[in-house]
Image 1 (cartoon, rainbow, N blue to C red):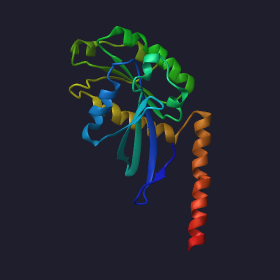
Image 2 (image 1 turned 180 degrees about the vertical axis):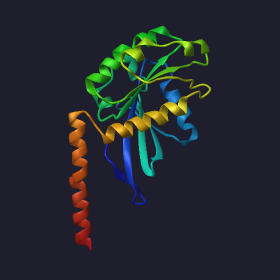
Image 3 (image 1 turned 135 degrees about the vertical axis):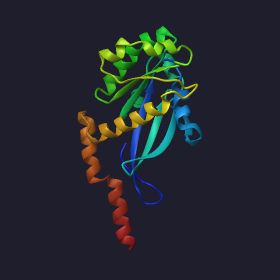
Image 4 (image 1 turned 30 degrees about the vertical axis):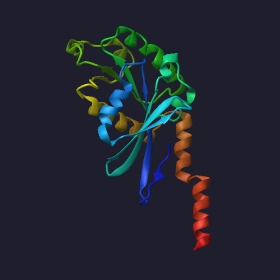
Length: 208
């Protein structure tokens, strides 16, 4: 995910953030709650996923974020490797009212680290509106892997905005300082520009 140029000639930084977790834990509802009326969902039936695009600014720089949602593919307990490709952050969600979704976090986290060993991961306990007492618990999974934990509700919006804003900041920070070798190479290549950019520049000069 490199930077792009928008219609007005502005440099736009592209980010990819993926959502993981069991079916029906509320991943899609969380994204929709964050974006409300400002999102543009795009169903990608070929890959069984939904993309939600969101534009914002960080320190004056325009950011275009693609939130990737599983769209039911998680029922197979595994995601296609392309789902993880070049992701800069992960939002790992479980249903605070269903223990099985918490137990399955380890499987999702293991697969995440198989493909993206170093990207930031945020742990989200959703549906706290059903039982507020869960907010008094300290979930060992997050502590074990040193993951920031959030108690949220897609139903009433509690902490939803904070989760996604923190995820965007974490993704941006990782992209600027990648620790994965492949990401480091990609970051270096961005500085040189793509062959397409060179071709466009050459064409522009010839047209002038």
